[in-house]
Amino acid sequence: DPQGPSDVGIAQLLTWGRKQGALKLHPGVLGRQGKLAVSFPIEKGTPLIGVMPELVFPDRVDADSAAQDQGRQSALDDDLQRLLQLAEGPENWDIRLGLRLLRESLDSQSLWASYLRSLSVRPASPLLWSADQLSDLQSSEICKCVEEMRKRLDEFISTHLNRNSPLSSSACAKDFMSLVLCASSRAFSVGADRWALAPVLDLVGPPEGHLVAEEAQGDEEPTCRLILEDMGEGQEPIPVLYAARDLQPGDVLSRDPSLVGDTLLLYHGLPQRARPGDTVGVLASVVGGNGLEAWQEAALKRYVPSLRPGRIAGDLLVPGVLSFPTEDAVASDVVSDGLCRAAVILSCPREADLGGRGPPCRFRRGLRPAARGGL
Image 1 (cartoon, rainbow, N blue to C red):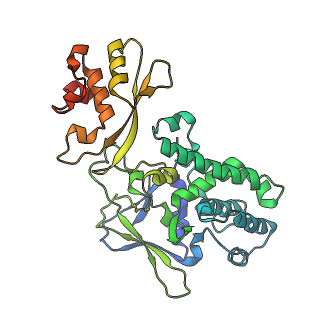
Image 2: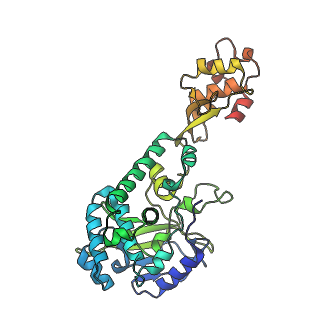
Image 3: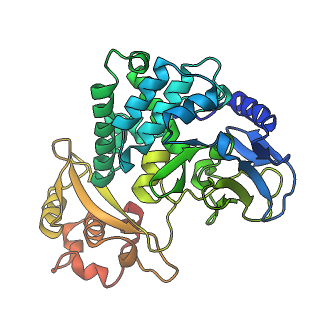
């Protein structure tokens, strides 16, 4: 199971952050159950967190500035620059941030020590899921994205982090993978193909992340907006988090990470909230054996062309699409044709109930109640 930042780690980070002149933190912001929330009413448009450039942790940094910022220069820093160059390319921004976090984790006097303690113990990314857990996603496209991302990280680790060099020899593949996934779940964009981390501010994630069953009512919008304040030509922008609406005590801070669908799942381990018109591909399992009549199996094979064998002998899979309903939607708008046909067949107690022309004629009159329940 994923384990987010500990309350102790967040409390230490907030204490450290309030002492930093380069980090501006609203007095009403506090830690709560691994998230940031507010302790008293705050008006819309109020700046909550601002981070000056010297405390922004970008995915790209030159050797001189990195050494100067920390007042150090060592073989570890030289090795870091070598590995950062090997991780060039817009798709490897997460690896570059992971490398920078790895370097800081090996320095007991690092300025970023409090930040490192606030990282998730076990990120929620599906790259850490088991094969059985991945199969529950029921989406070949998502599984393909997970495997491609895992292959990219594994190849970098096996090719470049197993050499006899200062940084590489200090790195455990599992620990490095965790740092990369932590970075990808907290990073924010600072321009074209540029990503960064920032203490306290990057704890604010997507609204889906703090929803639980009793809270997931309606269409919750982010409570904050992240703005990159332009400081003029030649100057790095300053990321500032503003209240997107009036906030009440206990409101959790959240922002829109501008990630959708598969990307939100890959980086945050979160499904995107369904909105009217959204669709999702599913695989409905029909369990064979005593519960499935021979005539039903024959009807499925005849009337559901997309039917295919399941993983267990005798089981069947019905690929289909579910659409998030609009107010005036009917069953056929929400459930794809193959799923509807399978539901009708399985809801009929006798073969004669299908009618002479088979399931399609039923769809013009709507699904039987048993079929809707089956779906």
